[in-house]
Amino acid sequence: MDNNKEWQDLWAKKSEFDRALASKQILLSEWFEAVDSILHRLMPSLNEATHKITVDDIREREQHPSPRLAGCDRVLVVRRFRDTQQHTQSMLEAIGCEVTTAGDGFEAVVELALGHYDLLVIGSVLSHLSGVEVINLKNLLRIDTPAIMHTLMPLGLAAGLAFEVPLPPEDCICAGNIVDGKLSLNLRHIIEGDHRLLARVRAHLELRGKHLSEAKQGA
Figure 1: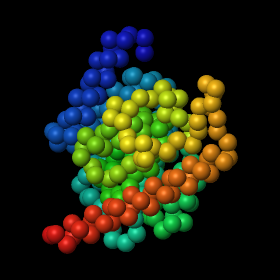
Figure 2: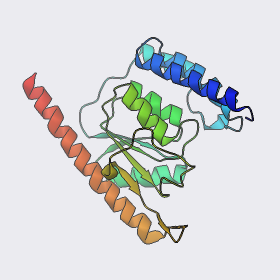
Figure 3: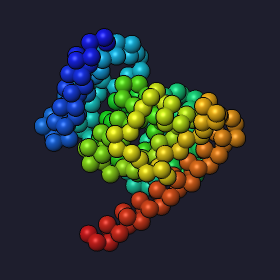
Figure 4: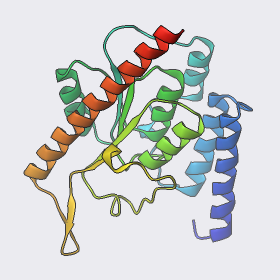
């Protein structure tokens, strides 16, 4: 899109719909329908094939919400590529988590808003909405699911993304580093990043379990 004013106007319109959703003036299905069309005007190259959900799917879930299931910790993993999703899913299932995966920023927001998750593990570069945008929207909607951003690339290089609301350093795990102005990333970095991710997941779930237990005792 060459017209900078048109780009700014469309982005401002998206922000209006975000605020309307947060204040419950519109339903999630209405937000999805409006914002999807805005983003496709902003970024005509967006691939429709990345969508796993439709407006009708969201309306159905709004009308028939799924119950919260008791038992193991539920984690939402949002990664762009299927092999990365499967790798993260396998790691978390090995420590006893129940994992749901998504590869699209819209799908992540829908799952967070209509599902019941104890933790979000998300990458930085996604289709439609970036990891940063998903987290910011989650916070705008007052969804208390804690988030861990897990990315191979340092955030300064990840599609030029900048945090509007910075995440605490312990909640952002970057496997790569910048050395002499270039990206340094090898198998050791990836393995170390995975270990740090598992440590943060365990810490978050332990803290969340403690808070839920205290809330039940106080009820």
